[in-house]
Length: 303
Image (cartoon, rainbow, N blue to C red; front, side, top):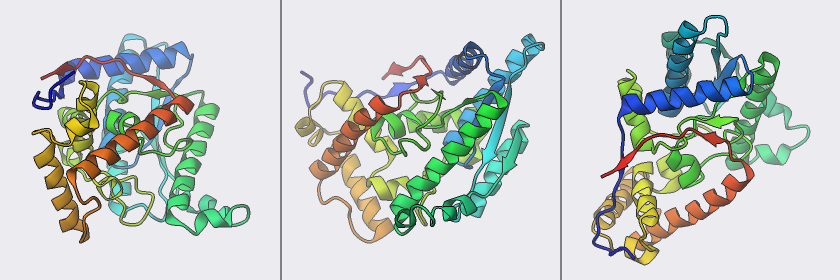
């Protein structure tokens, strides 16, 4: 058993090595399935930008070595009424900068069409948000099918496998998960390494509800969840995590930050916040049993 005083180790990486590992994983997976490339949804956020840059880099290298078997990456920008104009423009700029064939299509008419069959789903922001994510998934899979391509996921380790903050048959419905082993902290580092420093520090948001941020929904940043879940992996129990010297000041800072941003705390104490992260992790483990795409194996060290 670990002691509560033992330092919780966090993953470190050589970004160039990991970029090559993820790129090789993407190319191998796409070729194994005999696809002509891949499609992904571009949101303008750091996760989809990072995945797009990694995949495009890998495809460009493959195409230079095997010009008779080219692979193409296509990006689809699918805004709804809750999408921020800045995010749509950032997604356009990412696609242009990477040289991706891309399309921008508003899905709001499709969302509104559910007034006919599921009007109740449109009356609540939460259900409407999940429906929006599921519609995007249907479009991406239809595009992939007609183009003989794979659907690449853009979820990171903390988001998908840590706290399960995704729509199960929406953004979770993918063929492969290139950054599923990268915590959000290292996704930001990778994005900066790939030349997207301007997006590396972007506030995380699913963009499915007005004014939505991941921090508002979860009550903590992904980086805090990473500390808790790494501690769990390293043998610490919930009660030990709640008094751990790395956790306590960090948790208090998260509670104070939430109060400053939103006027009142989401959680009243450190144990409550830790318990919520662990509760969400249990749900994430259940969700993974239903949708489990291949995840890129990468090299990380704990320090």
